[in-house]
Amino acid sequence: MLRGFWRLYLNADDGASLRLADRSFALPAGRLVLVPPGLEFDIALSRPLDQLFCLFEFLGWPAEAARDLLPEPAILAEDDVRHALARELSVELAAAARLGPVLSGRVKALVHLSIAAALAELPEERTRPVLRINEGQRELLAVLHYIDEHLADPMSNAALAEIALSSESRFIRRFREATGRTPARYVQERRLERASELLVSTDYSIDRIAEVSGFANRYYFTRVFTQRMGLPPGRYRSERPHLPGGAND
Image (tube, rainbow, N blue to C red):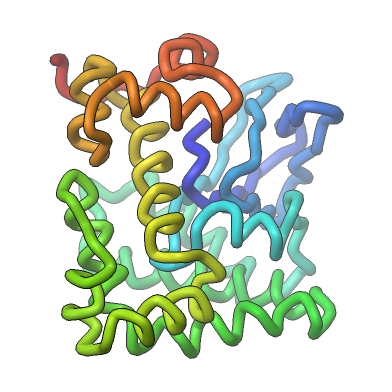
């Protein structure tokens, strides 16, 4: 599965589950289930069924930070407004030829309502860091966008501080307060997440993935990827279902 993304499921019937490393987690019929990024699992189906499935990410929330907040899938409490919207979207998305601005906005509304519901179930001490991250990210939003759009390019703290209109020392301090990571650690995590997505969604060579993800060469990429993911890129790709749609290289 793509590690760097959040996932939101709504199944019309029972019969689907997430196979985690140590257990199976059922996706109950008619209930929204939120799955945090960074969680290793496979989908198991006992029979064909209709499913609403959203794959999304929040800029500035690396997978590790999200997993600290929500370490396992969350079955959301039933809510008439949220579930009515989800059921309507299941029908609308199945019939839509493309995802226009109105439908896209409704999907985003469901995502934010679901995240809010999950946070509401957590104790205050768990959510306090999230509030600090959100506050700190307002002044760093341009930097976060720049990082995601330039992962293949070299990035120094000094250059990022210029984008933030800040001194380098203050930028590093504020960035760490806002994301829980140093700028270099955050950039590396985003590069690894991008690489892991490309490994399972494209036929790019390892060299090409290293290049477009911002690593100096495939050897350095392989070493860092193996240290962080627990297995080398080639094995990571072979052990996960391939998602068609990427270009050949």
